Length: 402
Image (cartoon, rainbow, N blue to C red; front, side, top):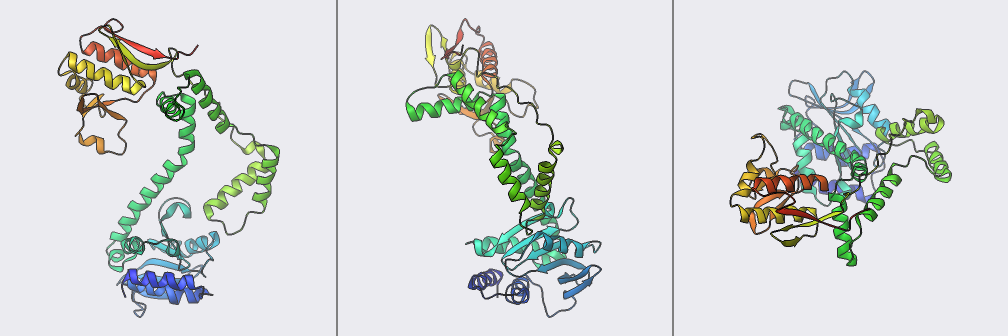
């Protein structure tokens, strides 16, 4: 029986509700799945059930041809996974030199690198749930990558697990930074956020909000996000929940609850909140909305459209201007102000905001930055085109803030 077929059958068995014990889960789900991954339960050299270890017995030890333990598998009754089970598995693995650990109730499969750094939850590199997935092919691919016997024996699975763990930790780091990143955008006042908000309000209402009103609105959001005090009723509800927190939390949740309990009982243990930065106003002049050139007013909807329109005008005034702008600065500059649209660097996930230059679609212009930054670049672009700033090209502002 192939792995995908074994997984489909295992899911159906789990959904039937007929598995009432750890032994039933092991026989009906875990053994068939591991067998489909190339492990032979009839070969005592590679598969040892109830293997003795100093702190107890691990349910299944999967070994190399030389008898070296490569994977410890700890089975639990369906729905009975807990932080205690995770700790028990790591106790079994302590000082055993086994690279990989599996904790499963047949439905959920958690895979860990035993000798990675950090707490147990920080070493988990894969988590799959059979009954919650409609794509057995993806689960089969993951389990094959990390638990196929040939891959485990030749260390390919271990290398793949290390790479996956690095990806998982990097994603978690980014996820945890979302709230603080959003707060810093609100507090520090980069113009891209107000401009996007102004454009969206105009799309929905037909009216453009004033810069000062946008600043006040975003500053209010920042204040609410950074507020550290909770209403007494909400504080009491949280305290009651923490005191009654269930015992089967993950180790990560358990650590967080312990920290919160300590802070509730001893407020002095809470780090002092960082002072809230005041948002800089969008611009002392107001919203950047185009420029005057050659006695003509050239309007734009926002700051970045002002830049791309200016680049187009300057290219018409001085052919080759965009190429000169792209070459401006150090040869090692990663993100020049202008790039050709087929530049391979634009495929990178960290590429900043480039926009097409009006009437010159094969060129893109870097447009992010505050209004003051955009004004500096407008001045530099004008001078690069051999024109005079505020004489040949003068910026236009709309709804100036007072």
